Amino acid sequence: MTIRAVVFDWGPRVEAMEGAAAVLPVFQRPVTAIGAPAEATVSVGDDYRADVAGARRAGLKAIWLRPGGGGGPREIASLAELPRVLRQLEGGEP
Image (cartoon, rainbow, N blue to C red; front, side, top):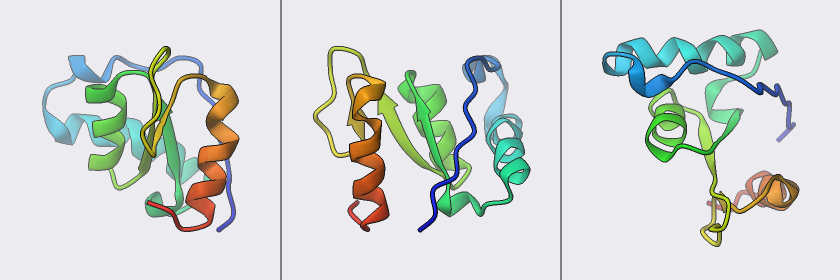
């Protein structure tokens, strides 16, 4: 799998949007911009409900940035852990 990245340091507050249909474009636009299929795209977010669940609803893989936490297979405590999790995903781990 080829990893492509688009980094956003801002974004709309997904939880403020009404319904799943309103959330999908937030995740689909960047995927379209990089020309990758959703299932080959990874989203990293710090809000489980808005970022992780929203990305999964849009068909992306999601990693939860959980400062002070982490430990789960797709959970990181800092961005320094991101390369490790991306390598795991690249190798086909869940």
